Length: 558
Image (cartoon, helix red, strand yellow):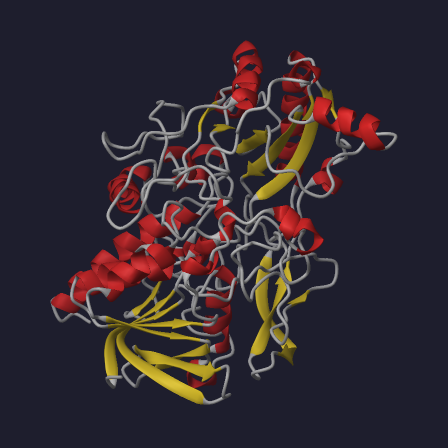
């Protein structure tokens, strides 16, 4: 390896891989450091059947999302890599620990943040505004979506922006259950519209269009379902400018006498050897929690607050997506003809938030919005989920066949407003196997999120009633129905961007205010957590930031 790279990037997921792609295409030499193992999507068990897997493919502690899930060494609990939670808090920290990170097994839901989402404080006086507007980021959404491939329609919905003409791929058609739910939504003024997902519906470059037969969470060897291991990383490799090291744990950013980042220190997890990597610019994209951990553990001149933390905001403003769910049963769907309804093995349709006008007028108990992810139909049967049956033999089989495909799930994914109860810090005592101090999480929802759950429950009850169905899951109080912190795996915000160094960690390009050549390109820089899934916004911001870095490298500013 050369002594010094143009850029050292920590992390290989959405932000890290996008930064590597943009920088290598611009001619920069890049070293990518990944804490997990190498991963080749050709490993994906795309067409294996659950009935042939141990426990019929059910999840286990080392495979939370099922036997065939693409996660190889990660999860909420990783041997030798603990984290802690403060007394009275509950937080689940997911780490993928594999090349490509979470992009190998995410749902690929790809909803743009809108004008309201970038300026929430201006709208309702809560949280903070981003230092950028939707108009600033819209061209980068277009460029990013063209590059990775996103299906969907332009519908002109409030706060759900259109893409430019020709950007989006044609979405798959609605299946029977989605058409059924849409009929109820139309009657109530609740939109049921084509989803946007990072799935190809036409061939593109070296990636093939989806053939509608494999769960996306298993990984996609043909590249139809976007993941950095079938796109950004191999594309960056073709430039000859990318070097990758896997199985290495970065724990510190090094600072030179000039106050600039000179590189990072890391541990080879296999040998335990401590090493250094140097570069003209350092890019942290290790994930929201891990990036905060690295900066908090970096103590220039022995300063206890960590690196790039003159604002005191590092580790603060931790947010996750609000989650809850309800399921329902619809007699009108009983005994219908059986079709292959695999489709894109994810959302064909969803319910975007529709109640903005009532929120703005103070006529809703919702402060911020949410969307509903909906699903049902003739999926591959798994273990569980068939309660309410009696008997055995032909009688039981007849009941199952009659009711098969008549169940439907409604899942809430909503916006969390940052609060003082939710943050991460370095645990003063506990260290991991490698001797690195671990993170301690504090987390709590507020009344805003609880009210949002109530709004969701009421909307689902109205929709199910209109369709002649029955809610089959327990309707619990919001404080009990809401997800745990981190459970939705959308945590963001521990090093938020802002308009000045007093109230934020980075500027609008992810450049830290305190260190001129240290950039963050993951979810840590989010100033708010819109209900839209964060991945495509991470990539759009990373593309924009890396384009700026490339310019600064080219002109000799870095």
